[in-house]
Image (cartoon, rainbow, N blue to C red; front, top):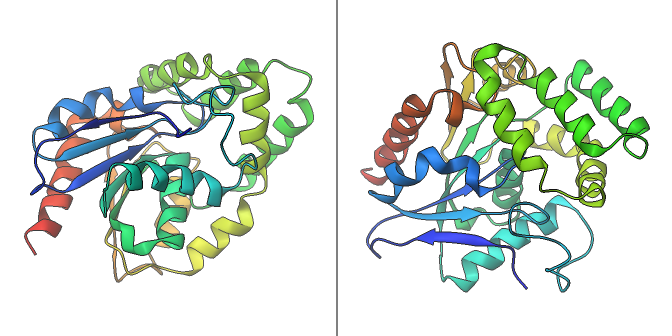
Length: 264
């Protein structure tokens, strides 16, 4: 069986925009984007395996190994089923890594990449957090660790809605599911190094909150090398989850980016 998805189809003449959530979330985190984007584009919302309505105990026929390649194949399987040849991809947090993997494996399927709260490097602080989590992942309930991580990544009062949204969605995960995803992301740095070294010839918009202290610095460094196809927008008074913290700015900038490519 395939992972769960929702589509909003408007016209064969319009481009597709595929939204991919982060770890512990679900397609419901895009609730502030659906109305705006479904007016102008065909929209595909993905629940990654083990998240939302893509429960692993239901998807018993899926590729069992949790690798980025297989997560990417899950998404492409939906596109194939719906006969979607190409799509713009918008992701948040870990979803941006999935998008980059899809582009790495099948660049012909990717019109553009919109990378919100992009993760392209785990800095020293985030690596320490991952090690702490690895030690305690089988001791503490996963929700305790997830709340801890969410607070470290989104610490301010202005990030509270995003933080609560992700924790609320994470409650739908199983402990076993959390551990599978955790093990995969714990070994992700070599892959991210490859992504940083190579700029793909695909239009890419990085849209980051200025208060995203964990991941913004590495994207700013990345932009010194990725100068041909990449653009960075930094949103003021905004944290990691840009599409929730600053919905109107996110929707406008992403829509303008896609429309600018379509008109070329």
